[in-house]
Length: 180
Image (cartoon, rainbow, N blue to C red; front, top):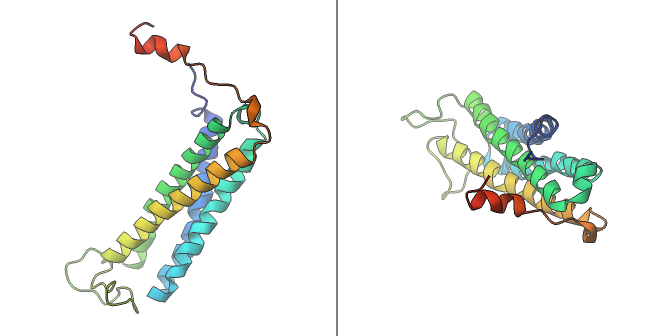
């Protein structure tokens, strides 16, 4: 059986929209790293909202596609894959961007380029903790925001879900019993 999520057109869309989402997040991460101040951490959260915009656009594109018009679950699954690709790209590229700003991030000697104006419970002698904060922000919040947008648009944007066809599971039951 052919999987509708994995074909060349969808893979290209996952990379395009996931990449756009990651790049929008990285713009705000760049300005946060450039400011080098704890007070500019709000830029990360604005970047999380900016991450959701291409995911929203991808969902709106999927509503108009003939295959996804029939099934809200397939549309939600495709948007979640694009969200996962964008989250992965934002973590990897964000870590590389941080390494370009702070090349001695993993050194054992205390650094002078750690996050300034951080509260006492978040003060860091080395910026490796700052890298952890940025990666956790990209992982948890970007994926959460993208998933929320994916689910909301998939089910709210679909006009008539009463005509959704159920998935035919008889093909899968034959494989589970050992028959081909």
